[in-house]
Image: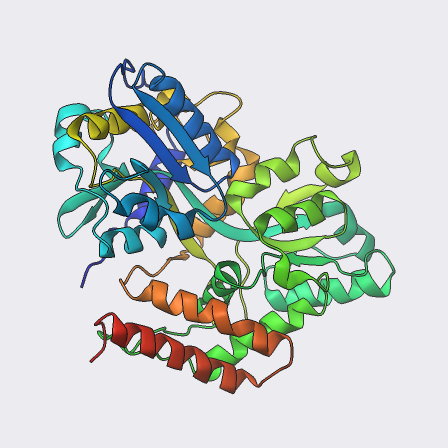
Amino acid sequence: MKMLKTALLGTAIAAVAGTSALADGHACAIDAGRLSIIGNEFPAIQSVSAAALECAAGADETASNLTADHQTLNVAGMSGNPAEYTSAIVANSSIVALINEDVIQPLDGLVAEYGADIPAHQLITVDGKIMAVAFMANAQHLVYRKDVLEQIGMDAPTSYEGVLEAAEKIRAEGIMENPVGGAYAAGWNLAQEFTNMYIGTGGQFFEPGTANVSINNAQGVEALEMMKALTAYMNPDYLTHDSNATSAEWEAGNVALMNMWGSRTGVLMDDEGAEEVVYSNTAVGGPLTVGDSGTPATTLWWDGWTVAKNISDADAAATFQALAHATSPALLNDETMSQAVWLMDGFESQPVNEGVLASVAAGSTPYPMVPFQGLLHTALGDNIADFLQGDESAEQTLADIEAAYTAAATEQGFLQ
């Protein structure tokens, strides 16, 4: 069973967050080969992509496709020969599909030739081979409006039960009708919210040491019921709200409490896109808990870059060198420093990073990295809406999820 080296993520983040000396960065003088990047579209990745493209300006070809749909495009775009994309910027979850489909190459040789300056804690190994270079950490945590909580006389909640209590008071006092936000878009986002909540209940996704799913239990019901309780205070169109739409709701002043990615908080706290009363009162908290498990209802993530397998040596060299430069200390400046919890030497934590660092300090769990987790994530995203919309019971929804996962896992050979 392949298992990514994520257990040390918290230690790596803590070590980097405490450094202050800026290094020189990597040299950048690429005049041949091809660089074509696919990845997500939030500010930190936009900065990495821009720096890589600038570094490779003298190469034969440069391009990027940063989109929220990257996970549905990267495998297909790296399966041809030559691959359309020479690199996919990935996270804990999305690298698994690339490894399973054998479309990315081990980086050991490229690291030896061009990556001597890359710190060891940024090298992600799978079965003893370097398969990615991580550059930032991420987690979902509480984001709240200080002024609104002051109006109702409450401190920032630390649990989802506290969120519900605050939401009811905000609505009852006529401050906001739908004060809770969340990336509850049907599909990947909804599955991620369940993953967080289920971990928070203390649930285990699989029978120990096997690929046999085991979420149709009391913890699974508890997670679904809390998610449904929260939706009672959300915009009625919550099933269409991904991180972008939820952030827009926040900046419009319609939301006072939400669980949001640390990588998204920078744009919520700057003075663009929102009135002063919104951005100046936006604050971050730690991860929320649910029930009495005491376990943070969130997951730790890393984002990093890969190199496609089906490309020429010249394209691989150009891609590696450009992205190594783009994720070196050379990237860090007044504009980019607050965009993420960077894993490079020289990172200095900013107020917007406090939620991610609090998630690390709370002992949050890395996103599960067993090779069949993605199949369960897909089954969750395809079925949870039926329960939230009142079309079936929690138990039936969990049974449907288990059946969908089992069929997919059997088809792919994880189950007999």
